[in-house]
Image 1 (cartoon, rainbow, N blue to C red):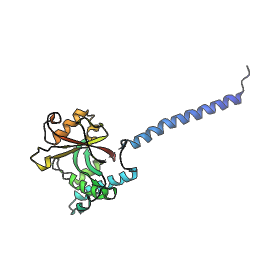
Image 2 (cartoon, rainbow, N blue to C red):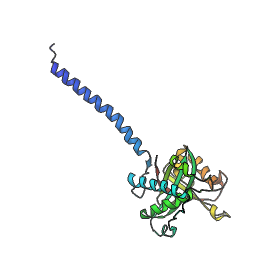
Image 3 (cartoon, helix red, strand yellow):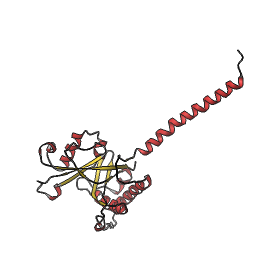
Image 4 (tube, rainbow, N blue to C red):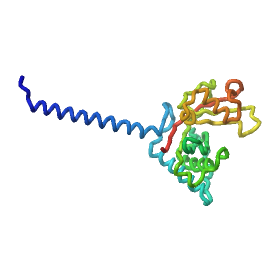
Length: 235
């Protein structure tokens, strides 16, 4: 049988090109996937946020943290302007260092997109001085991971298990609380996702944060709300 050298060479070139394409695809697509892993937007989330917008909010949080931990007088935004909206957005700014929480503050709702920058400043300044943790130091800030959660409309739940793990943050209301601060407690979905929580684990953590018994969601007359939550990490 006569072999055409030109056909063999052409097939070899095509094979090389196909191999190169597949190799590049294998390299590029995981990188693209990893680049998007710092944002999770659940189905049904009510607003659109770009990577640029979220990066900007995180940069603002870090800049605000530098200012609020320095000796400068921190220019608090006027919080009276934060809750004048009929929109349903809320936001939480949370700082993490080596997997450990370092401070967090959330504004549950009543915000619109144009006020989110002021909300980030407000939350950051208070998160840096969160009384549950040692105060964040100026030197610590470059090492902090910033987690921003944006909440959509809150909906009353039919039962404590009526939520999607990893997609929805929860609020628990305790009508019997003698303490005004203990009446309403929020736990963002990111907290449970990072720890591979089950629904029961998440509910126990929420009750513990609300200064209730861990199994209070089974035994007490509590009111639960859920919110589709956009979760973002800056790194």
